[in-house]
Amino acid sequence: MTQNHFQTGDIVTAIYKTGKYVGEITNIRENHYLVKIKAVITHPMQGDLHNPKQINVPLFHERRALAFGEQANIPKKMVKQYNGNILDYEKSLRTALELMKEQLQEDNSAWALQSIDNLLNLEKEYF
Image (cartoon, rainbow, N blue to C red):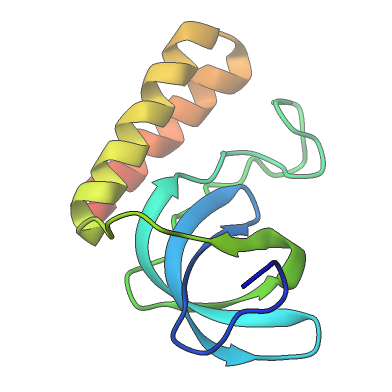
C-alpha cells in the first residue's frame, strides 16, 4: 500500500490546512480521499493561511481542529499510512493544543500572542 493507493477503511494520517489528523478513509475520489477524523496529531495554526505568522492581516482566523467523526476531503498527496495506536479524540486534542501553546510561548511574537489568545478561546469551547 503506497501513497494514493489506499482503500476504504484504511487508517491514515491526513493534513488538512495546517492541522494533522488520524482518520479512516470512507470514500475514494479522483484527487481526494474522504477521511473520517479519529484523533488530532497537530492542532491547526491560527491566523491567515496566506500570510503565515503575520498579525496585520484583514482577518486573523481562529482555526478549530476538525471534530471527532467529521469528514473532510483531503488531497491524496496529503494522506499517508498510519501504523500507530489511535488515541482517544479528546486526549489527542488536549495534547495537540498544549503542544501548540508551548511552542507559541517560546516564540513571543505578536502573532504568537494572538494565536495563544485564540487557542485559549478554543480550549473553552472544546472542553
